[in-house]
Each structure stands twice: as structure tokens, then as C-alpha cells.
Length: 196
Length: 297
Ligand code: SF4
Image (tube, rainbow over all chains, first blue to last red; front, side, top):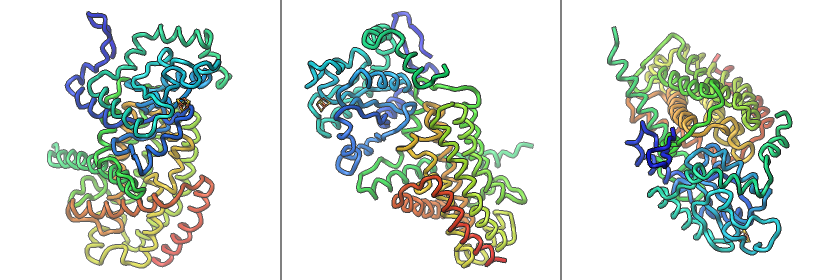
């Protein structure tokens, strides 16, 4: 499905359905399913977004509990190394194309936890963030604006975090291993599935 | 000889049923949103969702059975649809098509479960277990409602039931069959997977149950299957109890009426746990069903 072209850029377009690509792009923009994995302080900002006041279902956004079907991954606040492991595993479970929206100052630069020993300072080094919303904590309006920005970027094709993750997998992998130590995936898997 | 008219009709009905099924799913989401005082998605939102799922760049597979499950489910739904007399089209017919349809409508659930079990996800396993238990629980009232209906009209053929209802008034006007319809409606709620019987896919508990591992194109097939299924089930209800229909518009009005009853019930009641659901099915609907059967003897 993906192959390296003459110019060294990987192309992920489906060859057979190239004609329908604009249609799919529109559908992707209009139907973002959220992976309900709420970290940090921001999880509490999602209920007002989903309920009567800001109702994001108008735009086809739907909370979806299963990462396999999700498109939009919300990182709603500070990320500790322990959460980051889960975030990476969930992110890799999701199927391309997938997008990450980071809420608040914490995923950008650590926010109020800038000198904490146990908070990941710059999330973008470990997984590709497409849109980041500054603020501590951004109000639902700001989150809505971030989602709109995400839709705009999906339409003009600049929300390419999933492509960056594939192309620069070594870079992200190195940073992750630096933080958790080599072989953390296997160790983590063995904790839950003791027989492998 | 190839019967071109039949083939064209089958294709036409399938396209119509899929499209209307998607619109029904949209109506369901929109009506729920309006009841919760939200604006809600546009009516064609399920179509967009399915397109998006089809446009995913990768689909993870867990082996042959995993791929086969959704296709099997879709096939069973389509087969059930083709046996139902939809307006003036009765595409396939046999001597006992009521029983064929009644049980073909249950098969898709088995197909999904087959696929889900092979994914090896523990949530799928819990979902499948709940699904099978619900199916076992609802068989008894479901069967009783159908027996009452068959005893009253004295035939197994759906087209004859429609014709008899046209001559002697709808099934609901007969007191015994009104009770049977209430029973059927309760079972219907479970067949559509709506609250209070959405134990199988309980999104907040076991994260979509059997569907948890499905994504991308598999999920798109499951969505299409659900659309066909919802159309077939509402049409089946309309044919059995609301006198069938002589044209597609009449059928559509009856289907939407049936759908709205299901939506209103679903948006009022919270979810049963699995033991409560089984107990409930074996108590009230069963008692009502037995009364209905006794009244029609
Ligand atoms: S930015 Fe503020 S509100 Fe958000 S996670 Fe950090 S400390 Fe909490």
C-alpha cells in the first residue's frame, strides 16, 4: 500500500482509489471519532463539549471507546512517563490516518510542571502532535477552535502526524527508548500477558 | 434462463434498503440528540462515517475467520431482507418464510461473534458471552409472539399474512395479537441492540464488546450490515403487525413509526445488567407471550 517514490517521499495514497481521495478527505474531516482516553486535568473539559451546550456531535465527532476505530486522539493534559507508555501503545493501535490534539500548556512545554521530575516536558518528541491548544486549562471554546483547526488541516492535508510517525519512526523510537529504557514494550506486554 | 427483472429488483431493493438503513441510523442519532436537547449530527452522518472507515489506509486482520465474520453477517442480513415482502416486491418466497426470516435475522449476531471471538480480545470475549446469553434469553418470548401470530392467521407465509391483514384488519386490532406485539416490541429492542438491552456493545463498560477489535474496512462492512439489518427488522415488524404495505412510501412511514417507538424507549431507560435482562425476558414478556398464545388457541 505504501511505497517509496522516486523522490524518496513515501506515498500512502491508495492507488486504486485515487479518484475518490477528495471524497475520503471530506469524510475524514466530517467524522472524527475520539478515542476516549482522558489524561490529566483536561478530561473534565470533554463532557461540556459533548453535552447540550457545545454539542460536538453536530460536526460528526463522536466519543468512541475502541482505539481501532478512532481517528482523533485527545491528550488532555500533563503526561507522566507511565501514561506516556499507554499513550504510545494506544496510538500505535489506532489505524492510519490518525490525528493527535494536545490540550493545554503541559504537553507543549511542561506548563506548571516545568520543573517536575515526573512529567514529560515536550510531548512532540515522543509522538507526533498535529494541533496543540495553549492555555491552562483551555476552555471548551478553545478546544472547539482546536478541533476546527484540525478539520481545516485535514482538508488541506497538513495534518500529517501519522505520516511523520512512519517516516521518522527511528527518531521517535530513540526518544522513547531513552526515556523508558530499551525493550520497554516487551516488558510492558509481559506484565499483562504473562504467557508470551 | 436468467430472470433479469428479478436481478434488477434485487439490486434496486438492496441499494434502497442500504441507503434507507443508513438514514434510519441517522434518524436514531438525531432523535436521541434532540431528546437530550442537542443539535445532533446531520441525518446522513452514518454514510460519512462509513465512507471514512472505508478510506482508512490500513485494516488490521486477525486471520481468516476474523475477515469472514462481518461478511457472513452482511450476507445473512441481505438474505433475510430478500425474503421479506417489501411493498409490492416479494423477491424470494418459500412455504415457511416467516420462520426463515425470523431466524435469519438472528444469524448476523452469530457472524459478528464468530469474528470477534477469533480476535482474542478479552472485551470481545465478554461481549460475545453477553450476546449469546441475551439471544438465549430472548428466544422464548420471541418464539411465543410468533406462535401467537401464526396460530391466529393459520399460515407461515408472509405474503399470505399480509393479504389476510388487508382483508380482516391489521394484526394489532386483534387483542391477542396486540399482546403479542408488545412482546415482540420488547424483543425488538434487544434485536436492534438499543437500551435497555444494549448490554452487548455497552460502550462505557466493555468498550463496544464484540466490535472492539474491528476497525477500518471491517467496521465499514459492519456498519453497512447494521443498516441493512435495521431496515429488514423494521420491515419485518411492519409486515407482521402493521398490515404490510402496498408501496414503498407506506412501508417507510410504518418503519419510521416502529423506529421511533424503539428510540423513545431507548432514550428513557438505562441499561440492564446481563442477569437482570435474562430474568426480565423470562418473566414479563414470557407471561404476556403465554397469555397471547392461550388467547389465540
Ligand atoms: S495545562 Fe494546566 S490544566 Fe492542563 S494539564 Fe497542565 S496543569 Fe492541568
